[in-house]
Image (cartoon, rainbow, N blue to C red; front, side):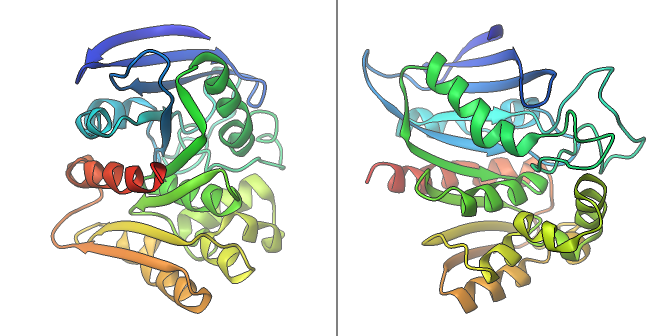
Length: 278
C-alpha cells in the first residue's frame, strides 16, 4: 500500500492510498479519515460507497463528514467505484464501465477480468484496512453510500450478516432490476439470467429473505433521477412486507448532488455512531 496524500483535518488525518488489487487486477485508490484518538484506541469504521462517475475524491473533498467523524471517533473509508487503467475495458457512456462498477463481480466478457467490485469491497479492502490501520476495529463496521453506492451499501449490508452494525443510504438505486441504470449494468456484467440479478437488488433480496433490523434512507424530492431510476417506494413496500424498520426521509427541494449529501452526511455519521458504540 502506497500513501498518495496525507492532510491534517479536524484534528485527525485524511489520507489517500493506492495498492495493487488482486480482485480487479489493477491499482485501486481509496481514502481513509482517521479521527484524533489516544494511542492504542480501537475505533469503529464507516464505509462510504460512491455513485456513478465518482471516485474516492468526490466524498473526500465535498462530503463534509470529518467534523462529525472526529466528534464521534469514527474512521471513514471511501473506495473507488470501479477498476481503472488503460487495459480496463470501457464504454463511452457515464453509466457503465469505468466509474460504474455497480459493486458486482462481473461474469460476462470482457468485464469479468477486472470488474470484481463485490469481492474488492466485501473481502480484499477490509483485509487491507485491518492489516494497515491497527486502530480500526473491524468488529464494529457500518456502511452507507450514494446512488449506485447506495445500491451497493444496501445489497452489501443485506449480505453482510453480522459484519455491519447499521446500514444507510443516500438516494439509492433500490431496485436495479426495475430501472434503466440497473438493467444496463446487470445485463452487461452478469448476463441475461435475471434470476442472477436478484442477488444484487435490495428489494429482491429482502423479498427472498435477506434481513437487517433497520435502514435509514435520505432522498431529495427534487432529485432528477427520483422517478425513473431510484423509486424509493419499492424499498418502502419491501421493508413493510418484511417487517424491516425503514426510516425514509424525503427532503423537500434537495437534488442528487453533494449539496444534498453534505447537508445530511453528518447526521448519518451520528446515527451510525449510536449503533457502533452499543
